[in-house]
Length: 193
Image (tube, rainbow, N blue to C red; front, side, top):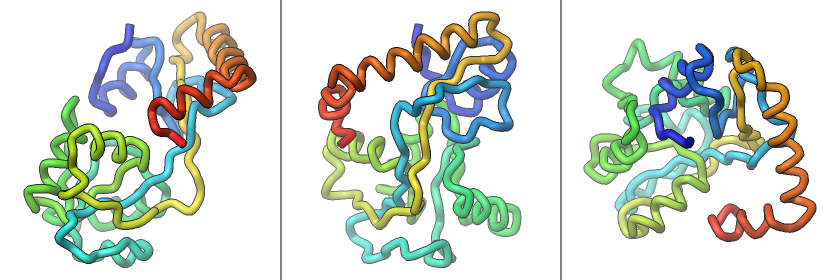
């Protein structure tokens, strides 16, 4: 059964063994989670802003003075995480941290309503929502944040006695889907090319 949870709650529950697994985890070293050897996909973080602005992301310093939207416990790349950590306590008014099942949609609304200036999100996730919700005339990509791709995995709680077996099945499934071409077809279907 797939259950949509706020990210922080999903991490909390998989760490405690209350749920079996989590989809979409990147940095996992600090968690009580086994992850697939083969990533499901890679994440490319981009900054998004409104179409009525000319702002472009041009390195971490270009965020200075911008009101940034984020999601509680999201792991961006290390430079963005450090920027948020170093600036949040001194300038909380420059950050809107959403949580809950609607955290992303709340950030999109905050961006459109000019409550925030910049929202940092995965390229594929944002493109999906921009297209699905017809937001092309309101929101634009202002530049890629991370220079290196971030691998995204499926993780299984180490407290689950079947964790190693599940990870093996998932790894074997990913390899099989890639070998048969089904993985590429799924990527095309969901615009992940």
